[in-house]
Length: 230
Image 1 (cartoon, rainbow, N blue to C red):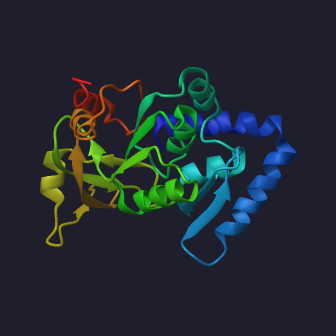
Image 2: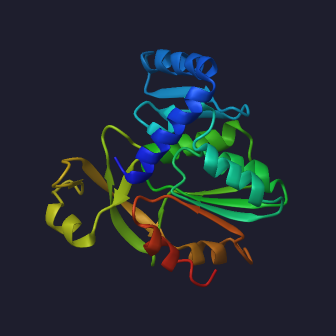
């Protein structure tokens, strides 16, 4: 578990204890749905936005039980993001920041979301559609320092916690099926497309980016190198 995830759990517990009965009810509904047949969960956040998610995704637990992904981050977004902004969500997961960013920037703004993990991206796309958000561009790619391909290590017990594998390690561990086995965690890893913020801003004809949210498990600096001209 990353330091960010541990800190999110701690803040989530503090929030839970502020309104224990409300969150206990949301927790019960969430856990009940986890045992229902099917591979996805359906839930709403504290503002009525609808989501689907894979069952083994910490992000879905936080939003379904607490009403939002991270209360401190959401307070920051609501304070600083304005209508008409152009925002990037790098490491969008199922869209728990893309959706509120879309609401905040409004019809005159735009959100560009990067998510390379195939099952997570499928949920992200469905969440944008079911919330009828027309100001979002979705990219099934990682954001990096240059365009190309890379190997994405997926944590089996938390599909929301993925990271790009170092190139040398990926080359050493690639098998004949084109999949990668991470030596330390023995989790399968898939090859994904990598693009840059600069390339996508130019392709979409955007003239600026006003806000970037980024959560890519240690790959943040590399992703920002690909936004040097933006």
